[in-house]
Image (cartoon, rainbow, N blue to C red; front, side):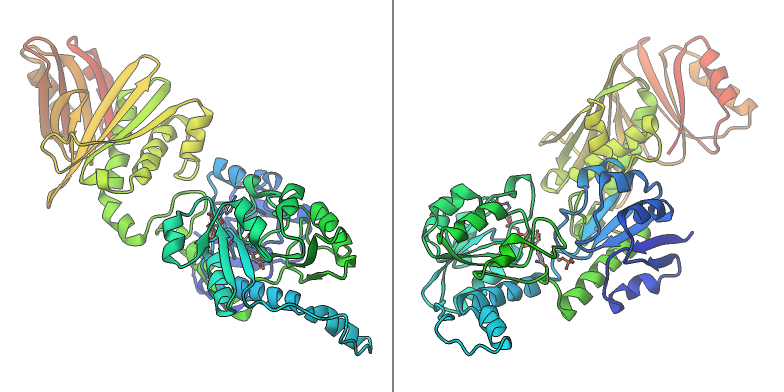
Length: 528
Ligand SMILES: NC(=O)C1=CN([C@@H]2O[C@H](COP(=O)(O)OP(=O)(O)OC[C@H]3O[C@@H](n4cnc5c(N)ncnc54)[C@H](O)[C@@H]3O)[C@@H](O)[C@H]2O)C=CC1
Ligand SMILES: O=C(O)C(=O)COP(=O)(O)O
């Protein structure tokens, strides 16, 4: 099987070596396609690698009938329609750790160039003007740098600014003040940061919540003479409000690496002498480009090899050693889901996944995804995967519960699935026994002990003499050997179940013959 990968933005040549060296991967590089050409081409690709330029829109993804992975060689994924990718089961991976230094260094370069008006002075000198009057700057020492978004890049900027003897004051609603304190960074509300800073730099992602975070209202709160830096994303700062704030002299200067619409050739902000700018160069260093490309290429290779991807964006990421630890439990979740969905055929209303014992200390959402994927595949087909399972369940109005409990019924770990359908409920539990592997231990309230693999026949019947004998004879007639048999009943003469493991796949007409035996209410043949 060959996987076709399209690279549609310029990537580091050496960085793509993991892809080029892979015998099952074929790489095409087309970095000058129009969006129409990309739409026309994308259908034949299994993977797409981009930077910030290619717009991975819903429309593009609708034409991407074979696409399984989008790799973003960088951090920001605002050029990728994540909902559309998730709905189609396309995993998105990025390279969040490889350009942090470069972006932080570029931010510092912009702060220093801004404070000393270096680009303006250089431009004047190039135009033969020896002007020492108009380019008087301000020192950074003892000035307050407000950092909005104290993630990877914001934190690195903070450390570098401290090296310039600046006071650093940060705002990040998702970081605890204790964590900021541990980093030795003063922490405040957005309003406090806006009101007290001499320089303000933004380092959040661009999302609904951060679009125009720095707007007219925010500029009104700032100190007169404040200087603004944006090396994160155009759109976090409202460009119109910034323009007005510069014209009114509220803002003394701005350094912009990014713009609301890119690329730009003319922009009203660029007409202002207070504005210095670079064309989205924050990550444009040899080191960052090589490393982001290696990271994302390796994840594409991991993905096609069926290994854990390190930097997924639209599913939760788990460290490799945790995934290795969970591997047996994930297989168990899949087997339990397969068995349960065969036993409970009607339209699903609710799926509950309950963890007990050892499992309740672990990050368990991976089990929920695997379970829901397995169950929905039975109804919706093979396009359901771990990326889109929860999304598709929600879209169909299926309620998903994920719970933890201390009740583990003498097992060190227990995974229980409940399924509520339009006509009833089903429940199944399994465990991983130390040294012995996986076991199904309960089905619909009946205690069992089944190794979840091979050919299983599940029979729901009425407890009465002779059933087992007749069933044995029927199977013998068809030369079907019973490997193990488990029987349990609610009470004497009441509801009972039988779970047989047989040595070969059973034909459907034999299932019908068993069904036709008077006492047997329900027969299911399931291959695990
Ligand atoms: N100019 C360039 O070439 C580059 C730009 N970037 C941009 O920088 C952004 C940040 O990158 P990283 O630091 O690696 O990401 P990160 O995820 O480590 O940090 C983002 C931080 O923003 C915080 N945040 C989210 N919403 C916020 C809000 N409403 N107010 C304040 N803080 C908020 C988050 O809690 C997080 O700590 C990227 O999303 C990307 O858009 C990244 C690399 C290069
Ligand atoms: O990594 C990011 O978020 C960046 O903005 C870098 O963008 P680029 O890959 O240089 O187009």
